[in-house]
Each structure stands twice: as C-alpha cells, then as structure tokens.
Amino acid sequence: MGEELFRMEGISKSFPGVKALDNVSFSVNKGEVHGLVGENGAGKSTLMKIMSGVYKCDEGRIFIEGQEVHIDSVSKAQELGISIIFQELNLCPHMSVADNIFIGRPVMKHGLIDDRTMYKEAQKILDNLGIDINAHTVVRTLSVAQQQMVEIAKAISRDCRILVLDEPTATLTEREIDQLFDIIRNLQARGIGMVYISHRMEELNRICERATVLRDGKYIGTVYMKDITLDKLVNMIVGRPLEDKFPKHERKIGNIVLEARNIRRKNKVNVDRLFVRKGEILGISGLVGSGRTEIMRCIFGADRADSMELYIDGEPVKIRNVRQAVAHGIGYATENRKFDGLALGLDVQYNINMAHLKQLSRLGFIDDKKGRRNAEEYIEKLKIKTPGLRQKVRNLSGGNQQKIVLSKWLCNDVKILIVDEPTRGIDVGAKFEVYELFNRLSDQGVAIIMISSELPEILGMSDRILVIHKGSINGELDPKKTTQEEILYLAAGYNILEGKPAPRLHAF
Image 1 (cartoon, rainbow, N blue to C red):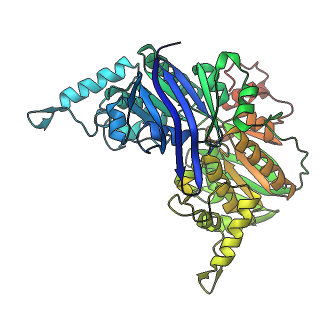
Image 2: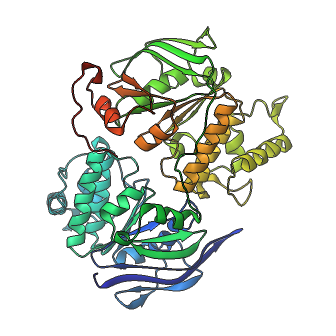
Image 3: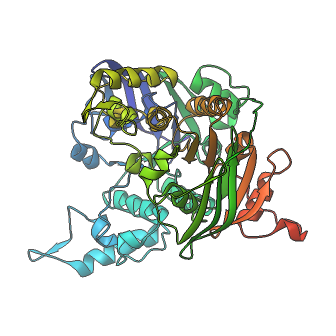
C-alpha cells in the first residue's frame, strides 16, 4: 500500500431539488488505481467534478500529500496536478496530436510558437508512455482508443499527479482495453494516483487495488478487490442482492413482423435475409466495426441502401428516410444517445415527446397539457429519476437518459424497436430495469432487435443471435445452446459449419 496522495473528507454538494453528495470521503494513494463505483446518479461524477475544480463543494476538506488545499477552479486543480478525462473526449479533431497535447500553452521561442521543439516534446511524452502514435498525426484520423491515449499524454504533459478516468473502456475493443491497461500500469510505476470510474465490474479486478462505493450520494464503503466477490460488490452498489443479472422470462413469440432481404450498401452491408418475430428479442453480435449498426441504419432509413426489400407483417413497404420508418412503427434507440438520441439542452418533457409531437398537436400547435401528462406517464412507467419535467436532460444520469430515449419511442407505439448498445455506460441496477422493460415490451408484442458488444447480455436476453462479420451474417445461434467462444469465433470471420475446432479466444 503506497503513501496517501489525495484525500477528500466530508464532502457535501446540493443542487436545486437534490442533494448530490452527503458527507462523502475518498482517498487515493501514490501509484494506486482506485475504483469509484455506484449506480448512475450515485454521485461519482459530482465528486470528481469537485476534485477537478468544475464544482465547489458546499462542505468538506481536500488534502494533497497531507496539506489542505482549496480547489475553486479547473485551472487551480491542474496547477495542483489533477486531471480528468471524461467520456466525451476534449480534443480538437482538426489539429495535430502535438497541438492538442500543448493546447493553450504552446512552446514559445522569441515570441513565436516553436513547432519543432513542441513536436519533439510531444513525441517524447508519447514514447515514454509507450503510445505508438506520431505527434504530427491529425487527431480526427485516430481511433477513439488512440484519442483517449492522446488525452492521457496531454494530462501527463501538465505534470499530472492525480488522474481521473471516467468510463475509459466504454467504446473500446478488448485489444484496445489491454493497451490502455498497459499505459495505466506505466503511470502506476511513476507514482501517479488514478481514479477509475467504471460500470464493468470485471475490469475492477484486473486493474484496481481498492474500490469505493457510493449510493444515493452517500459513502457506503471502501473494499480491497482481493477480499470481495463481484456479487458482494454489486450488492453494495445497488443495496440489494441481484441473484440473476438477467430477469428470467418466458416469451410468447409470434409470426414474423419485420423481414429485410437483399440489403446492400456500398461495401459495408451485404445481407441476404434478416427477420424478427412478434415478441422476440433478436440479438445482434459482432466485433466493433463489423457493420452491425450500418445494417440497422439501412432498415431504419437513416442511411440509404443501394438495394433492400422490406416487409412488415408480410406486406412490402418502402422506407427511404427516418420519417417513413417511424410511420411504419419502427423506433431506433441509437448507440450514442448524447449525440443523436437526445436534445441535451432541452428538458425531460420535450425529449420524451419529441417523436410524438404530431399526436400532441392540434391545428399546428402543441398541447402542452397533453404533453405534460404523456411525459409524466412514462416517467412513472420507466421509473425515471428527475427533479421535474423541466430538468435539462444533460443533468441526468446515463441510466435515466437511456430511459428517456426508450420513452421517446414507446410513447409512439412502436411495434419494432431497434436498440443499439442499450446498456452502455449505465450501472448494474439500471441494466436490470432495462432488461425488465424489454420483457414487458415483448409481452405486449413488440419485436426488439438488440445490438450489443456485451456477450453475457446477448446470451442472457436474446431468443436468437445473429453474428455479423464484415457487413454479412456469419451465423445464427440459439443462446441456450451456444457459448461466448462460439460467438467470438463467428465474429472473427470463421465458419463453425465447416467443423473446424474453435480457437481459444478471450471471452469478455
């Protein structure tokens, strides 16, 4: 156990209508990766924003190496060696890696920017961290994982001593996660203390020595990962035992409600036939970049297919745009809810009603009373936690934002719901609630197409599984008779029908 580097004592913070933190304490040691876990809305982000100077605490004290400090701004936090890397990366995509690393504080010589020295220093930082990126590369050409590494290099260039990583692996592949963990271990060896926020329990065992649990803004406890099982940790997080991650349910599956044939789009989509039945949950698996999302975007009309034949309830239909898809009873909860699923600057009521405005309008004017009643109904149905209808959606937790995305389509009476990474970035308790919602929808006859990178989720919730490789269906599996390895085998492009033994692949 290393020497204590950072400590927060008795931190409290209130916002209008809610107490976000109530007497919370937290500490990080030199060279430690300390997990910070809890359900969405537990107070993790608020605590880290106080730590990094985004918010000021109402009560409490902060210490660095035993000395009390007052963090009243982001610049003060950076001056003290504290950096935070949010899920939404803060980079200028049109600029080079070196420009991003030294943004706001370029290397100067004789009153001019010394590009040569700046690029040399940036490359040195990247090399020392073991990051294989050229400092001259334009950021927009990098993968998400590489951009995240540039953010880490930027933090290190500011003499960072305490680094906060907020859901760093949410959009990464297994190989990219391994690369990130190598860099984290490099930082540990330098004595840098890190806070690791994640909903992926398995990762905490791999990278964290301790984990602190928050629930409803309160400190629940700090545990050593070697001394606790994941089930007990989940129990601490949600405040109740979750005996099964996936609610048991017997679905009544009907006739085919949606069928798509001959879907072709450039060189990215090549599907002969895909269908989903009434009340069925169809799982779509595949590696990141396999074409899973592209196929669904064609069906939904978000991307124009070169060719496609669509049938709903056996009748041929033409869908050339999103409006036509919605008119035929199709909804799509997108992968990136913050980018194309929500209007973050608008309130809860508008976001729930945004796909339902025609039904709420009369003579071209929206009936606000009817819209309010509709929003209140779905807040109650989906147990959305919000101080009120007029709360801006950007201020809600990830789990509640996801419920609002789903509400938007459910109040439109969809009969086919496409959900892309439905539980990404939300906690274990909220995941269970989403799964229960899917079961209720299937009971109502809604056909659900679920794209997911989480193999336990695919196996636990699907009635059938399609595995996508390079824009094509490489296999159909029965979740009761298959394994994670078989799914990975198909996702990697192998064909199990050939009878070849599956190679040993890393299971999630």
